[in-house]
Amino acid sequence: MHFIDSHAHLFMLVKEKGITLDEIFSEMKENRVLSLLNVSGSKNESFFFKNEVLPAAEKMGVKVYHSCGIHPHSASKYVEDDLKWLREESPFMDAVGEVGLDLHYNFSPPKKQEEVLLKMLEASLELSKPVIIHGRCGEERIIDVLKQNRFSGKKVLFHCFTGDKKTAFEIIDNGWLISFSGIVTFKKAEESVDILKSVSVDNILFETDSPFLAPHPFRGKLNTPAKVKYVYQFASDILKIDMNELAHKIENNFKLFFS
Image 1 (cartoon, rainbow, N blue to C red):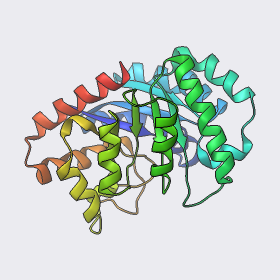
Image 2: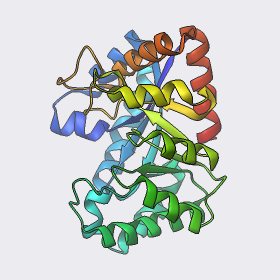
Image 3: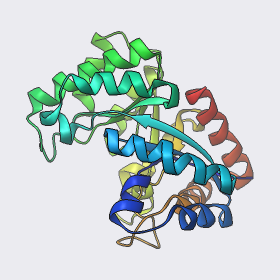
Image 4: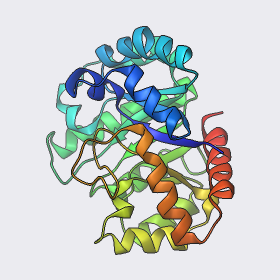
């Protein structure tokens, strides 16, 4: 049995939080987390992945996947050269993301966010890569954009899902996945728990979104990929599914999505 973290920001952990890759990967192995998806939002982050993360992961025996894309927070800084970057990164990429809309913080104007989302969806089609969606308070509009651009049935993952139950089922009805982070373990996350209980295990993944959103009992502390194990444990208890069975199912979902 092993676990998979389907969304982590290694650049932030190392360059901003001061943790070494050896420490990250050692902790992962101690907790049987043997695979992760690293998310890059800039050329610097993808350079770090290729030149530091890949060699360290190979040395430690950890499997790392990679996605690249312009986060909605950075949409106002988007330039056409960013598409060139994605094309150049394609051989190292397993997905385009995280991309989408963040209508909670609005660090970039909503109109600009949507323009950049469309560019990222075009890149996904051109490069034949799945899409990882960031959708805080913007899930319904993102669904409309995806459907308008014929993404129904294509590989789309709504990461760190915090929308409502109706939206969750609409996502799944379109053939897409949702991912649960440490938020689902929080005391006041009743709606997220209800969604977890209601959807099929065939349609979900688990993640840390580290360095953010550490699960209970680490809430408020620095999150790391190894802590995804606690999301699995919580889900196993809530769903009354054996941990081995759940881990195997999530691994299958992950491999199908990123194949």
